[in-house]
Amino acid sequence: MAKNESFPLTLSSTQNSEAGTHYARTTTGDQQVPALKNVPLRSPKAEIISKDLVTSGFRYVGPVIVYSFMQAAGMTVDHLLHCYRYGDCVDLAERPWRHF
Image (cartoon, rainbow, N blue to C red; front, side, top):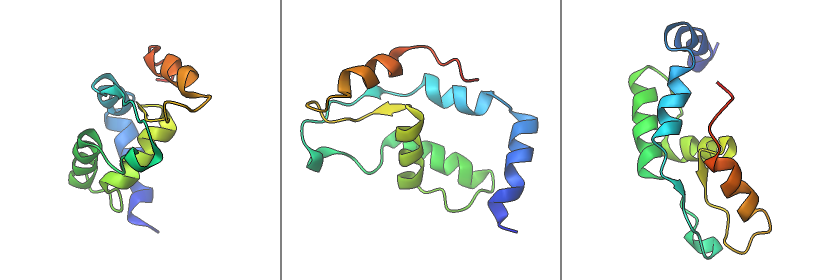
């Protein structure tokens, strides 16, 4: 069994929804990216979250992995300015989270 598989139960039983909402509320939000070469691989917030997860015992959760999750979850918007989805993604990111 992989080490990370045993942690979701522990994390969800102790902190439940507080884990995601704390980071979601403190996200910088919109990063206006003019070109593909300017899309970051990590962010200071991803490094903080990564360190918190490693301290909690998780493995293989470096800042690049965490930043990818943040992109997928809508915690950060770094679509290119000329992307046809840019406006929609910014609007979705500015709404209050109702997932938790």
